[in-house]
Amino acid sequence: MKENTLSIPVCQLDENGYFIGMTTAPIDPLENDGSYLIPRLCIVEKPPKIKPAHVVQWQGDKWQYIEDHRGETVYSKKTGERINISELGLLPDDVTTQPPLPYSEWSEKVGKWIELPNADELRLLDKRKGAGTLNRTQILIQIELTYGEKKEKLVEIAEKELDGAHKIKVCNAILEAQTFSLENDDIWQFFTETLNINQDELFQLWEQAKSNY
Image (tube, rainbow, N blue to C red; front, side, top):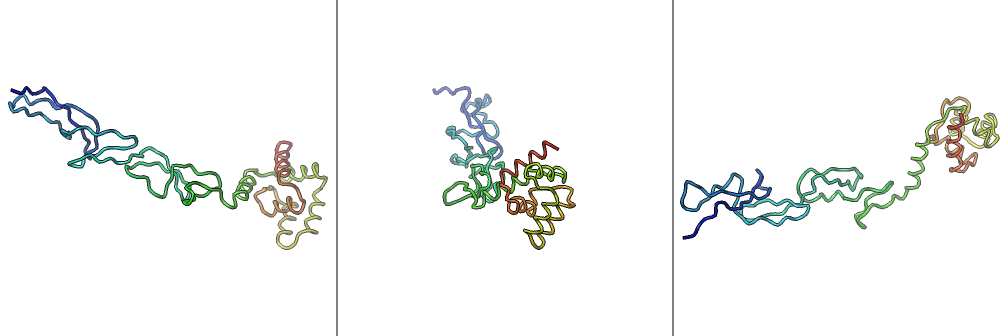
């Protein structure tokens, strides 16, 4: 006569049929037919093999493996936006695990981020924005100390070299503006093109003016 074991291993599932782990089912002490008390949400099956980054779900007659990227960070190929994955399944086609590079766009052709054609221009614009502002005293004194040009001389140069709205804006800025910003295109062009100040020298001048006054 075959002797039944006191318990058998069973697979424990959650409410959605996902494999949680193994537990045991005790033999039914009230029956003499070798039946076992199978716990709720458990099945008598061979346990599935565990795969990295996957969960396993019971389909009624077999195990199904589903990719699990929950908790991972991916990036939108369109915007570069950071996205946290919270659902099971394959990653959407419009995201990538590669973090975007500065001033880049996603290329499906090469499968990576590539630098934008105007990346240098965008870098410079951000640098201009990050330079901050100076008041009239700071910038005019620093220009006079560095290049020997006083306010009146700057106005004279602007009136001679510029025209139209650009000339008016620059002259008004030199005579009346309370603050100066390299983000301002008229001021930037006046310094770099009209006064012919090298871009790197202009940024250095800007920082010197901040620290000296």
